[in-house]
Amino acid sequence: MKRVLLFVPLLLSLYAGAQELYVSTEPASNMPANSLGIRMSSRFFKMEHEGITGMRFEPELMWGVSKRLMVHVAAYASNQMQASIEPEGGSIYAKYRFFSKDGLHSHFRMAAYVKGALINNPYYPESYHNAEMDLDGGTSGVATGVIATQLIHKLAVSGSLGYNRYMNNTKDQLPDDMSANAVNYSLSAGYLLLPRTYRSFEQTNLNLYVELLGKSNTDAVSRNHYVDIAPAIQFIFNSVTRLDLSYRTQLFGNMPRNVFNTFMIRFEHNIFNVVKKKR
Image (cartoon, rainbow, N blue to C red):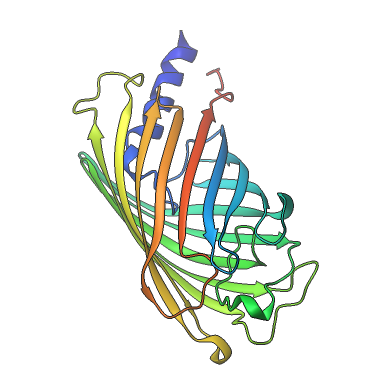
């Protein structure tokens, strides 16, 4: 019985702020301590240089190390650089929540993150005219930044500011005409549409999101920028399983890009298997 009494609040604590489980960005909040999660993200996009549909698959393992620290380990595979789906490499992401302020039906969180990626893709040939690089399967490098998230009843708003440093891939060197440094920024909002009133963790949640995602290359050889918009819908089942559907497209910018529009399907399941008994 003690295990049940501990287990239920753990589930409710994860999705009490369900509307801040953003699809394209991370919130400043963490998953519960001593919990594990698995995630599969599938992205589909039209590659402008060939006019064909590209696919990228991202299996991910998530670990709530403590109430302040969580770690993600991800792998990548796609057909973006070759005709068939091939492994591209992996990344590790860590987020530390350093500030919390709780109120009635509200809270404010701030966190810092760091990410490292090792990718084996060749870089785009010159004919692709692509100046966008990313650490999610495309480019090796490191990133760091800060996140702030405010939850007020059924609305959650979050912003982030970060720095990316791109490096040589295992198969190819970073081209001289590509910016090795970039600043990324985001503004996200999530609204809990259903349920109207929480009665149990078995209720299905329906969340609506809209996210603005920007990046600016800062080196003189490729100083350009873009801002994308990514609306999304999210379902959460039994407080442990979520399904995300998202579409991302460019609002404005002058950065030459190989991909302007992306559709994503994501499945995630959380496992609570480390609940210690009180002595």
